[in-house]
Amino acid sequence: METKEISRIALGTFLITAGVGHLTFARKEFQAQVPDWVPLKKDDAVIYSGIAEILLGTTIIATPKKHRKTVGKVVATFFAAVLPGNIAQYKNRRDSFGLNTDNQRIARLFMQAPLIAWALKSTDE
Image 1 (cartoon, rainbow, N blue to C red):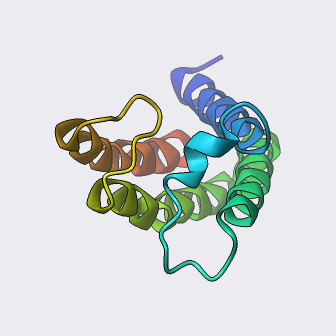
Image 2 (spheres, rainbow, N blue to C red; image 1 turned 60 degrees about the vertical axis):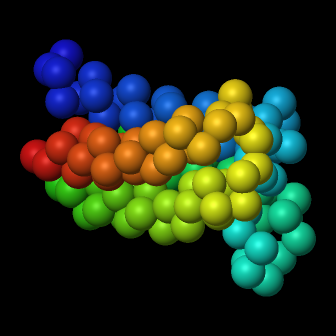
Image 3 (spheres, rainbow, N blue to C red; image 1 turned 30 degrees about the vertical axis):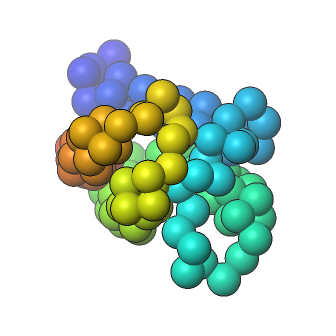
């Protein structure tokens, strides 16, 4: 198995695990990242985004090679779309996932770019 394929499968597994976390063990933690302007109950937003992550993770693993680049772009767009949640967590000083200082919360903002790159690079066939 080549490195790119391992990376893609690892990303899919990461997304599925995060999605399961949204629905179960980390549900409360993820609620801290939902911006106040989202027109849903925080728990509903967490559930919907968890389902989306499970579907995206499954799709990035199972998609045939000829469609992987497109799926990678969709996953990268998803990672960009959740950035406002990370900004809200920082702006509103919400503790979650052990991020309990402004420095830790701002450092988290810089993790979206590597996730976007991971999605694009692991699916660029």
